[in-house]
Amino acid sequence: MKTWQYALIVLIGGCCYGALSTFVKLAYSAGFTSAQVTGSQFLMGTLLIWIAALFSKKKKLTLPKIGKLLISGIPLGLTSLFYYQSLQSLNASLAIIFLFQFVWIGSLFEWIFYKKAPTLGKMVSIGILLIGSIFASGIIGVGFGDITWQGTGWGMLSALTYTTFIFVSSSVEKDTPVVQKSALFTTGGLITVFILNPPTGFLQLPVLLEIAPYGLYLGLLGVVLPPILFTIGMPHVGPGLGTILTSSELPIAVILSAIVLSEHVSMFQWLGVILILGGIVAGNLKFTHTKKRSTTLEMESAS
Image 1 (cartoon, rainbow, N blue to C red):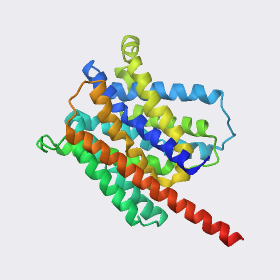
Image 2 (image 1 turned 120 degrees about the vertical axis):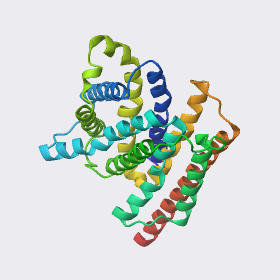
Image 3 (image 1 turned 180 degrees about the horizontal axis):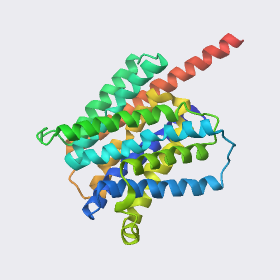
Image 4 (image 1 turned 90 degrees about the vertical axis):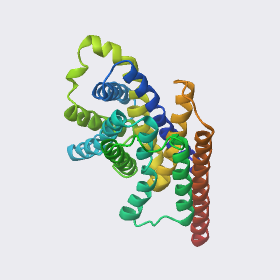
């Protein structure tokens, strides 16, 4: 596959996360709690991905490798727990701003762990994305009066764990088949969610049947697809550009809130969506140019 195809795969993974908040709001409006929503999401998602794993390529893994992949799924579960908790005390536009901080945290991680300082082009791209996120959130004209310390803390924790998952999905057990690896990631996330939020609140049959449609949707887009897509694409684009590409979640969240929830989207918010898309394109063009130049230099050195 070509570089832009891997980048597109990661971009789609970010879009999947962007589609979650709208349907979490719908689940809340139907009377379900954060614990019920998160638990059903991971239960349904884990079942779906293990069904897919039965019919996909697998390899024999040692117990230490299995344990490593299960542990790597912990930040996947924590991200949903923290983000959905922040939505309890913040409105969606503010909560997603804090989650969106993964854009610069990803580059910071890359700098610390890979010793790759962000280039000027990447810093410009991140700056555009952060400015766009402020516009897209809708807080301009409304202000920050609704911010709570609890919501801020949960939101920043969700950004940290989301970045951590992007980071580990690009580096852990790269030779493990994609679906098998993702199934173990999600199982680790499921265990984490059930330990921190015991599933007693939704495993009763009547509640489970009512929440199942939400769980299936959220499980597919929040548990099944992102780990698979990130496992495929992240090793080829790296966590730095990966976090820029996954910022596609905010435009998707804004667009779906307008279409599905009929929420008013201001001109400032549409401007923010355009800026974010521009920042993604700028970051990707810079990366593609760098990859082409390094490939050319390697070919020249070989000859």
